[in-house]
Image (tube, rainbow, N blue to C red):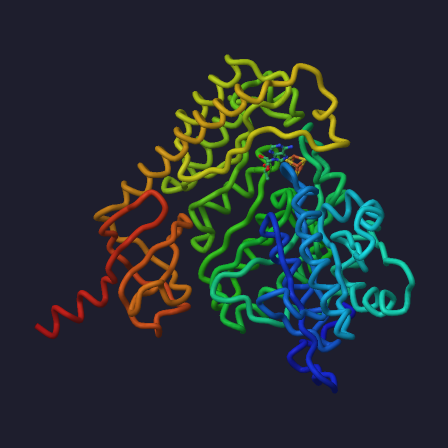
Length: 468
Ligand code: 5AD
Ligand code: SF4
């Protein structure tokens, strides 16, 4: 890292704080990136605020992965334009920036449609935000940056300043070389890039020092990670997980999102051998039909996926799986849809995301013939979701009566209640003292509901018994 000064040690700039409103759509990588944009702007005096009204700068961090992203952006911009004009009428100013994958995909088109936008920046340009803000102040037109030098971004971003909490994300990989037929990521985020392991380990150590106990490693295709190791050798994700697990204070490790083809033997063994690697894996399958999987360019069959699941479960018998499914990819017939339902039944997912196929301009599937009509897509999605919800509810219900380790992350919604998560990423609530935040404690599950679990702390029960 060329810039390794923790922001907390940077002297606050003189002058009044500037109000920065950030809005993030889409995936966890965007949430992480939004945090880093706040970090990079902090030395300029920008501090995050909760509402756009009166903000000195607004950043919309967009997501392009699914339907209507562009429409959503322009309707939001229309609302913000009024705020900006109101502020300008009072003699103030507001910098309006569009970041993320829609910015990458649409570039200067955004400014053509919304000339009041000051900055358009793609995901690889966040480290240049301060300079762009300065340029936007001077320039007559908008500043548009959508280049792709991803290594540069990681080298220039400051170390994470704000503690992210007991559970936190850490981006270790970006971009994707898989070119699935339906997906914009290879076009918006570019080729695969893995951060050097030393940089990841250093960031992880800092996060743990600030209280993080559960680390979720992020990447568009995270299990394709192949970063340079401190020993000069190339490290895969398994090697990185072993090294992260050695950091004192790390209780839990996760990673997302993975491609079945990059699930190698070493990574499967890591699930068996590293207790900190949680028994939960998000492994998108997209479809259960070989014909559709081929049309999607996924590079594996349904049987390959099922075999992989068996091997993972052999390595870690309590492993629960989650997935992504797309209903109605071009060319999908009724029998293909049935094959998807059959695969879901075979695997039994603990949770899942499912989507109706929507064409992303510029992707191969967008130009493919044999589109599935909307009514069929809707019905198929409903059938898929009904089955997935049933499986999720059954999985959660199966924990009723069991004792599970919960990592407590903060207060619950009710007074005296704590909120946490299980190894399988389910939210769990139990009465307990705030001193438990950041710690793992055993909870007996009283009710496994479809979307969360309710339980009681075992050590509280013990104390009650001792007192009696
Ligand atoms: N249409 C529908 N779903 C999509 N996804 C990605 N692109 C599309 C699209 N064009 C889904 C995939 C992916 C998840 C992040 O979003 O299931 O795994
Ligand atoms: Fe998109 Fe994931 Fe396929 Fe890469 S592997 S193209 S990110 S769906």
